[in-house]
Length: 292
Image 1 (tube, rainbow, N blue to C red):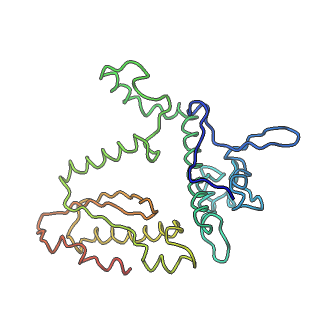
Image 2: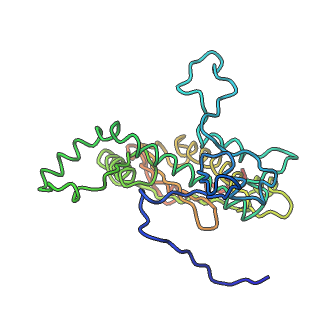
Image 3: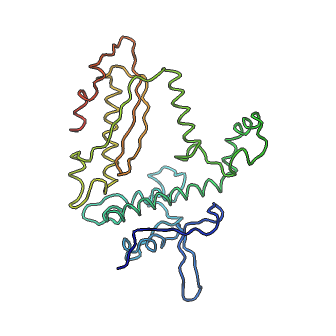
């Protein structure tokens, strides 16, 4: 088969929110060209025919919960979100092949694509509900006017992303302000700890199937890492190793090979608690973490 080592992508025109929509265009016998959006149930089988050879239905708007009453409790909504849909289908089930996790790099691609669909859905919702969200930024507009900025083009874009949207500028600024506020109350931190996921953990090596690599099962890696992170945070809060703890601040990051690690900053209560080199020797005191 002919192949090439180089890959190119052709973009026609300006790539903006108004004229860019990720979709699939199919040609029918009677109606000509038809656009299939990400909310069409046939989008995933058309995008990944190797993973869904029988045309299994994908996500679509309006899928109702199986238990609409929620055991007698009133729900805020009766339909599932795109996040809940993919979270259900990515879940591993014994003796049942799952196209989202069982087919190597192609499964990774479909999981990343599903995450991109979720972000696109959220951004579309934010764009369509700007009137409800803009009220939160009136104070920022006043601050801009006080700085002498009167042109709307100088203040920012028309679509404002709230701080609840992970990764946006306001999200980063809010977390930064929270960290600075903790430093203003408790002073400079005492410990900086890096906790990295180990692909040789028994929980990972015994859970993956034959022929799989640990980074092929992001679902298992994330769950095991989350359990061990909860354990190390409980150890820190208990005060067994470093004494009473005033505050803990941490940030989780993912490496290129898919393994997560966390940066932890710890404030120690120094009143009546002497800090010695033996106390700071975290590696020798918590070596058992790799055995859990």
